[in-house]
Length: 629
Image (cartoon, rainbow, N blue to C red; front, side):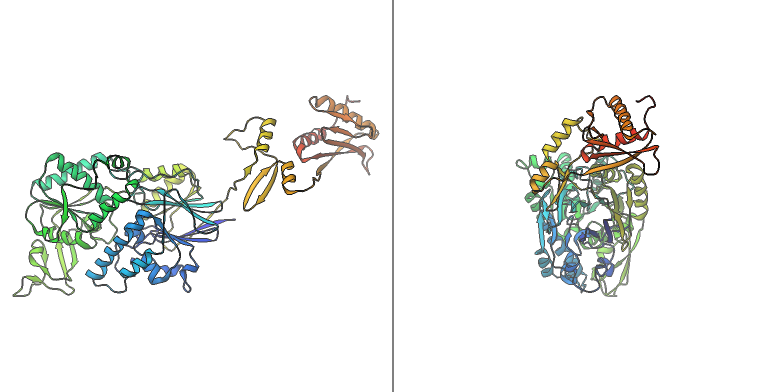
């Protein structure tokens, strides 16, 4: 029986480091190749030795598909292709191909140049890796090889995010990556057609959440930012460079304009210019409103939002800063957080999900005393509030190497989900749209997944799986084989009976021709003509035993009279040789070799008259009426 095997190397009962291996009809595909934000050791990347202990990865994998540019979906790609060694094709959309190397380079700078880590991919490796990428358009069917094909669907979430359908013959899998079923201020909602895959692999980040009204959340966000700025505080909003950042920038820009506010708003430098460039370049991926107004006004050119300089963090007075990355695990957002954490006037707003192990996750869990690495020399003024550390007698600096500093968090911590992931309602909506035969959950927490799994199984009556990392799930498929039917045969069938009902299966009689991996059902005459064959008459014969002591010709006469009376709409004939015909059906009578009181009726028919032949057989098995003479 055909089967599909799925093994998560990352994102199995976990969020982060998405990497899923799928085996379908002899083809092996890797879905995403991400890194984990919560780890700095070997656990940061997926364990690729699972694929093969010896030999090249290219020999085992037919292709790699990247759903979008977030690092937990593409962060391990240069390591995988250049350091572990993979030379095969890597598929992603055009915006993902454009943005991916920028984020990878930014991540490399933080890890290597600032943290001083070794055994990490280089800038050249990122470039070499991107040379292996094949960019795809939405709804374009891409033939990976003769049998394997893939197709991308719009996923919302971030610019360029896509869901992918992987198809081999009549077996198919849909992988959602991350997606959002509700449109936001700059992107549309995810969409997929009723493709009825054998398996839908869906993210389940917010498996148990049903989000409140977006408008209420936006109003609450603006109120909190406004109140903090009014009392002279600073607001830090950690974001990833693309996606949620643009969403909140548009929101604050319009609010500042409407309220005529003067407090400065800043955005981490470098990435924002590039981000806005790509939004302009890939304007067709944004929502309808932005596309419509783009000619008059580009929504991504902000009047009130300026580029941020590191020195601005020490400026007195209120300000709002969007800083990367979004989970406070490194980079500029973490540096600013350290400076501002000790002042209760300030606020940090976490606008999305934070992976376990990150500073963002710790403060959202209520932790208010944090141990921070103080590797670089840090001015005392930066830690005026709440840091205990040893100070050299004549120095105004905290010294490192590796000195652990305790940071007391006095600033207000708020969590407001502006996440671009589907909530529980959205996940159910997508399942309803695609109508899969099986569902598999990834990119979520085990307890939440368990709840959603039960809900899916109850509502849709399909099997739902949630494998852990390194665990293989095998799904047996029952492939339906598409068959083309000739117009002549369809016309003949509809002429015989009623018009076919779309909801009820209809039995079709014809000849099945298999050619070049495709199937056609045609009339026998057409098949003989196409194949240049002579017709052979095939008849089915059934024996019916009847208790009748009379002579054979008398029994035949009784049968003839009985059938003539019952089958008024059919041509029933008694032939000179003593046999009976009903249409193409032939009935002959012989005496039983051992019992003269039993007659054997031989009923024979062609396959065209199969229904009538079966009916006659069952009728004769009931015996002859006594009055027949």
